[in-house]
Amino acid sequence: MEAMGMIQASAGLFAVAAAGGIVMAAIRMAGKRNPPNWLAMLHGFLAGAGLTLLIYASFTTALPARALVALVLFLIAAAGGVVLNLVYQTRQRPLPIGLTLGHAGLAVVAFVLLLSVVFG
Image 1 (cartoon, rainbow, N blue to C red):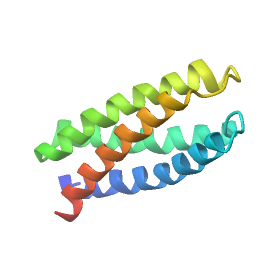
Image 2: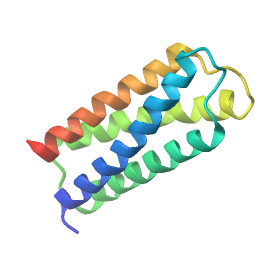
Image 3: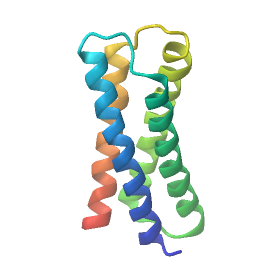
């Protein structure tokens, strides 16, 4: 598969994961404790699939610099997502708003960079 095809597929996976992330953030910001576990797992699975594909593309093809920056930002956002899941979600502790917004902010910047490669 060519680089652009992998970047496009990765962006599609991140787009669906982002939709789930928006729903989860809305649930948390509405004052409820945490989003449902199944939604958190689906969000993480889809984002992880997109990230894995982007990592694979970076090792097998020459990616544009913006895609590599997006990859690094997605990796940092993923680390925040792992903390949110393992430290808070699975222990039924309320997700901290600051960490949630930081995780989302990094992912949004990375997603916009990735989209700039797809559509630029």
